[in-house]
Image (cartoon, rainbow, N blue to C red; front, side, top):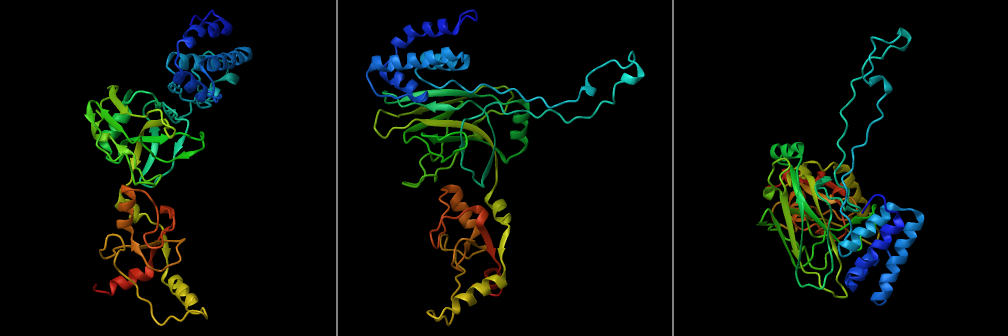
Amino acid sequence: MASGQSLQQQAHALHPRLKTLINNDLKEICRSEELPVSGVKAALQERIIAHLDRYVQRGDAAAVSRIRYRIHNHGRTPPATPLQPPLPDYPDSVSPVNSVNMPNHHRQAPVMNLPPRPRAPMYQPRFQFKESPFYEIQEALAPTLELQVLPNNRTSTQTTISLTQDLAARLKSDNSMRVMLFSAADPVLGPYAAADIAFPHQLEVRLNGDEVKSNFKGLKNKPGSTRPADVTELVRKIASYPNNLQVTYALTQKASARKFHMVIYLVRKHSVSELAQRIGMVFTKERVMGEMITRAQDPDIVIESQVVSLRDPVAGIRIQMPCRSTICSHNECFDATSFLQLQEQAPTWTCPICSKSVSYEALAVDRLVFLLMKVTTY
């Protein structure tokens, strides 16, 4: 759009294009702009025009530009623009001033050794995913892909992943650094919301022409049991190389259909053995004995003996690291490594003994059971 045109002229120039859009495109624009989506085609057009005029009256050029992009791209959201690194507050004394020709009372102060400017992330998704102990999200590597609900049976979209020299070197030298594909279904509540990982049921993902083989479905009726897809091995770790990510999906016009948002992240992966060794909390022998004595003093309960199983309830093998959650009331333990392996495959985070919801941070090693294991040959 010509820079000399006023916002009013720019908005008016969009009307002919708006008239050519189908109902689905118009509804998607209304939905993205938080406008009602009911009504016939003419009503939707008038609603968008009135919305556009309001931004013109406010002089909001960014909003007009956003709506222009939606109109020219069938309602899609504009891609995230790379953010410029923030400049630190460098003191004036480090500016290159020639101190030779200056009077003594204005002589330049010694140059300070300032730390290098931190590199700001290139892309900023408008929402976050729920945290997991298995990976730490570092930064997004490409704009967010929006998988729209469209009348076609199968639709494809794509984006490009381009690594900087530093990121390419980190991926080559550090095996814990991984490139992973995340996905979330609408509605995503906002910048402070934490979304579960969820992929469309009918999905095919290719990176540089190779199919991404991953379990995109998770457990049935278990939201949050899906894990991100690791695509590190398919990424060509060459600086500025255009790694092409192609997503083919089917989101037809059904009452339950929702659009999805996909993000490619650089993450730091933590192994199961690493997490098992990092469990920080401990049930001391004295604490466990005190809990058992307290329960034995209940006048309604008579306890003559208690059997402690050293077999993991899920894997069926001998427990190596006895563990349970601090929110559980039972003394039975499960093996920490076996439990974490299960959560890495399908993260339900429920106790295998009492089915309570637990978290990694609440896991603790039972020292009494650990001591019993040392004197038991089973």
